Length: 474
Image 1 (cartoon, one colour):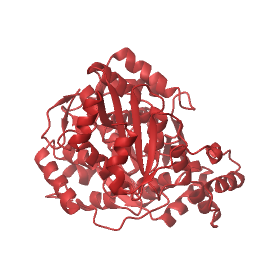
Image 2 (cartoon, rainbow, N blue to C red; image 1 turned 120 degrees about the horizontal axis):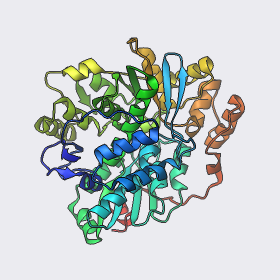
Image 3 (cartoon, rainbow, N blue to C red; image 1 turned 90 degrees about the vertical axis):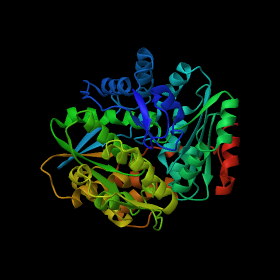
């Protein structure tokens, strides 16, 4: 599979080059260069995941890809990595059975193997991985890359605004080759710092002089995005016919993967975008206007505390049938002015196939309580926003697959407050104990309470460029 940039100003790249580059040289995101043929799911998730990798990264050695899949799935606590839970008219697709209890584990347990194979195929050399995180990407990336030979990884996270459990998953992660730095800012600031680093010719020159590739573990990297397609294809076999999807949305990669699964033949009808109070994408789906010029809200669903969702750029490219000039214009306006409007909105595909709603923190916690009271099923705040979104939208007559993106034990204060309607303890781990007592469920992640802190650096935004150089040893 060859890839082109959404902005149309970079050379076409083979899969190994696209994997290693992360971001295209013109600042765009890589997308497949040709239309996608149908890809039927395999009998197991493992088979489907391997088929997806062969489709999108088929230039890499096939036996090695199979070994990579087996090595990644061995780190999950279920034989086939995924689980399904029926709750009324919805089916929750549990994506949090990996090492850090978040959906990103599925791609990030694979990404180190994909980058190693791509590097070997392009002449060798190590990799330097730089990623921004709103909570879960950083811990999943650090766990995936820890002690991988030839790799160094830095995760930049907002120093405030993520849960203590999420923070400890990063700052307590062992591995001499991984680091986490808290930035005094929000996720958008961290993501801008990463994109600025990739656009910095001095940083790229230093990486080249060190004989290594500079890349990303965010969903701007095709190695992060396309493994996620596999679980929607696998779910299609489980759903047994046409179905809708509803996905908690941060950087827009997870729901975009569902769109790619549809392009590969999955019988997906409506794609429902679930947003928190940072509802930029919700407004975009409804109006065609992307406007990030608004207050930034720190919520109880921190992985969705984002105003500039990078993967919307890939959707624009798909909706305009590869019109890179339009995409480049819109993204330039977004960067310069903070907004853009799709001309002639609504485009047919957006009007016909997408829907959106959102929830504020109080509505999010009411949704957690609703699912617990009706079904005895415990969900996290991000998944709860998808449940509330499904309740807001008119029924289609099809069942809905909800992406359950994180374990509720990562957000014990919000979940406990939702169930008891009382102020929870300030300490996440005290709240975790109280939640376990209330629900009579066994907690996860309690071991982090006494884990040693290994990464304690916090930096101002102006210090980010030097911090990146130091952490990546460039």
